[in-house]
Length: 90
Image 1 (cartoon, rainbow, N blue to C red):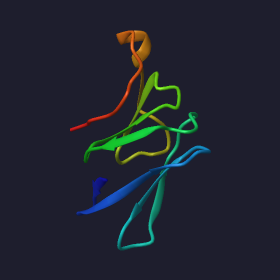
Image 2: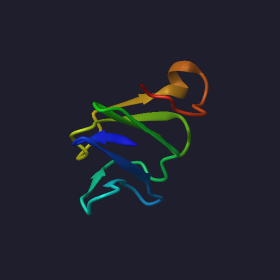
Image 3: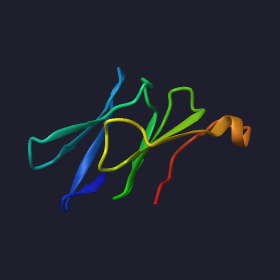
Image 4: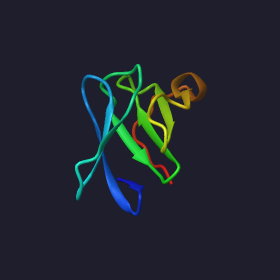
């Protein structure tokens, strides 16, 4: 869940590309775009969204207000010598 405009937004990773972001009480849907497909896990705060790539080796970060392209990408497996199992983002 992404807190946005005083209402929580639901993030949904799709198998073919973008992360969909929608509200429970309105019809507005936005997307977080990335070159990665099949993202495995998502987490968010008011300022950022993070996703785990399908190979569990990279974390992709977006500014919560800008879904047009990722703000940063961290190759976690290369840096920490382990794959990522889960996300907890606060």
